[in-house]
Image (cartoon, rainbow, N blue to C red):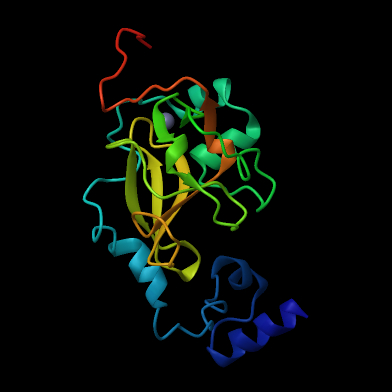
Length: 206
Ligand SMILES: [Zn+2]
């Protein structure tokens, strides 16, 4: 079958029909794939559009510069998948989804930086822990164009760990009209009030 095709090609192109020529000269028979007329816009966006809401480059300039291998050593596989590979836990499964303490702090499950206070949390009913605000400077935002959508990703400002996404203008009865939709896996709840950024306790080191 194949040799017959080649022979036809060779005949058509007036080349020698000797077997030697068969091996010596690869024919460009696989270039017939039609060229795509236009790459899709989301693809272009992913390549070139990264600087509308955030000027920082993802994953390059965080105080905590641990490598993937170093993270793997201290995180569970599920934590690594979500924090370092931007995964998402299934809705309604997270341990902090319906968690509603009156005080305390949610810290980054990767680097332990305080991210949210208990009073920031509200019952959104969306299946993930929801916060209307964060501890000042603790959470950084990036434009996320994955899956053909434009969303705002939120990460830990100290280690770049993926937390989830933030949504605006949904009409929740909260002071900010924002919902930080965060994976429980990305968080650790601490009962003691420790307000980083407001300088309440010092000298704990790290
Ligand atoms: Zn962190």
